[in-house]
Length: 200
Length: 202
Image (cartoon, rainbow over all chains, first blue to last red; front, side):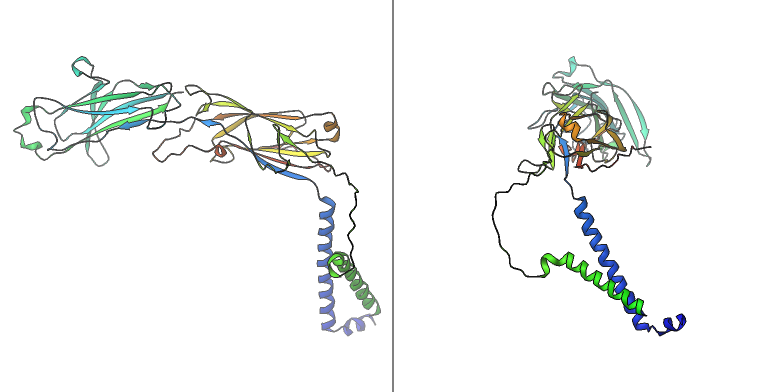
């Protein structure tokens, strides 16, 4: 008898019952969520906390640092060529808030037989000491040769005052090379490498 | 077969009841009258202050708080400025004493270890007893009604360092970080309903 009863349920009835059951379940879930939301409503707040601490400015300005010496710009002579550049701890509007330490390195290509001297805050080089203490030659990955001049010491720029250090880069291209056509079309590149860091 | 029919009918009736319950307020048009009265329902206040600044709104809700309870030490740096190598402490005081409900709160300390865009790193968090570390960067606590009636405030201090182990290379397009980049402490509080704080284990 039980088997007959089950068989008498049409496919349509069974599908309808399934749909009703599904819809009911869905509504019960909606109702549960609705009721739970009421039960668990509560005060809540969130905020992001910051502090507006002033950060120190780091200002290290370098001026007039381009020294490409081409044949028209430099010729062998008895005198010396002087190029000036400067470093400072301030710009047009602001001063560095930290003490700075910096050092220098002069790197030249080896195309011209020049000698290089460097002076700091010197108005008359005959009364000043050349900062360059020796040089070494090195080549890069492409095989190009460079001469690296070591500049002794580190220099300090205090935040307490606006300071500018003026450097004189003195190049000598001796007159005895005047008749040597080997260097006639050579260009010498001189790079002054400045590295500064905050004093800790 | 009869049982099945009965079941279906009962079920449908149940559904109709559910519908009626949920939709009673909107389904039917009804006569309505409005009577103004002077009855006052005392609502519990939820008032929290951090370092004296309201986070629960006195007029406007403060979802971004700028605090100045910070001390720091910097060497070779102009007074009042912070620079790589500086170290200091952020002090937080949560004042729940004007609240009428118990509070469960958390402070999440978002520093360089959590967000690489941040500048400062918190290296030591000191808190009142009862505050539980509930996540690697989060400290939580509960203020009971007894605590509120006793006028207890919550104090947390966080030591920080402007890490200089990794040099900050200043290039031409370098821009100083804004104050939002220093650190962020995310505060979250809810009315306490008897939950238990689970301590964080590494």
